[in-house]
Amino acid sequence: MTDTLAVQAPLDPREQSIFDRILGVWDSLSLLKQDRSTYIKSHDVLNLHEELVEQVHLLNVIREEQDKPLELNRVDYILDECFQLISLFFLTIGRNNEAPAVYSMTSTIKRLLDHLKEAAFYSPKDLESISQKLDSMEEIIKLGKATQSPHLLKFLENRLNRCRHILAELQSSLADLSPQLIPVYERLVSILRSISAANTRQKFPTAEVQSFQDQLREVQTTMVDGKFLADDGTAPAGQHVATELLHRCLKWSELVLARQGKIDERFKPTYDKLCEVLNQLEKLSITQAWSLRETDLYDYQRRLDKIDESRINGNFEDQSGVKADLHTQRTLLYMIRRSYAYIYTLIISSEPVSEALLPVFNQLQTLRRCLMEVQRSGGVLSPRELYPYSMKVMLNACIGIQRRGADRLS
Image (cartoon, rainbow, N blue to C red; front, side, top):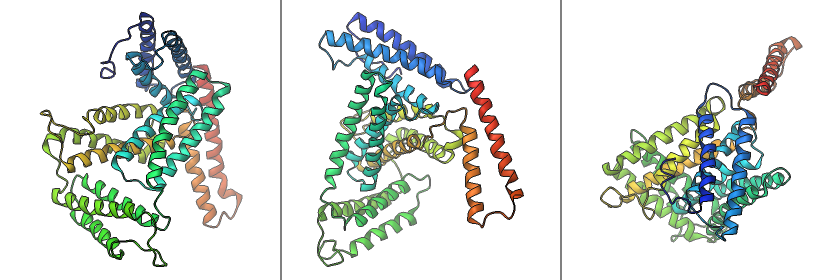
């Protein structure tokens, strides 16, 4: 938060009082996030959210009076911090399908789209997944019109539209790609990502990268006179898109093999920070159902944002202002992009179940998988064989009722 607040202070004294009240909300949110002694309660989150929305309304009134709707100062930055965190709180208490929960997702998608645009390689499947998520978020915002502040909904719609604008740019860059070339293109995207992942391993896998290089040459041998051909012998549209990516993959594989995963020492501290974040997010993606509290993602997002925003004109530079070489630049950007992708996956995988009931939900999910496996293996011979499963269902139901009651009383 200290980094975020190092911007222009509000000039209007009325905005200063709003800033002070929002800062109080931020302090309450921070304390709530750090408290692991109990489950997060819905009424605590909803009260803080209502207070925050009220301050947004007062801020809008002041800026409309002064005809400064686009004003940006310290108030706006702390608002972003609060909305980001409170959005994750909504996910934690299981209110995934309410408008405030959309905020953190728009932030993550915007970052991810920006990096995909900068990297200039992505598959149609990547864009389709994001497009579907934006559609579902739009539906959530529409459903919120009956219960949520119109100021908040308009704010979220604007953020959603910014994401759609970037998505449309990325989709248009693949518009020339013929459906017949999509399998080749997606294979090249997969190989390029695999090489980048191997490049960040603690022990560089030379043989593995060489095998990826062999796969690229195998793709290259299918070309005739420098073109990819369809089954009928014609050259499908979008040749330049696929061939440019192939040449990029070959050059990157050569550079990665030459560097053997060694990063420029000047940028080793940044590399180590990204390694730590990436490894922690990877572990969370494996143990998500049992160990993730969605508000934990806030810290990872901010650590990534700080590194991402430290670039100058898109480049990583050392203390002397010297730009990073191509290998270092691409390696660091891959790690940032991969980390944002993990956060995106973790958020969209969040179940609409409150934190208090999540252990019960996870056990029931496991029980369901066990029963499905029993069904696949031929079922049971007698009702007696289902008794252990029935007892487990009843026990989880009792625990769930008890926890909901405790949550209401606290």
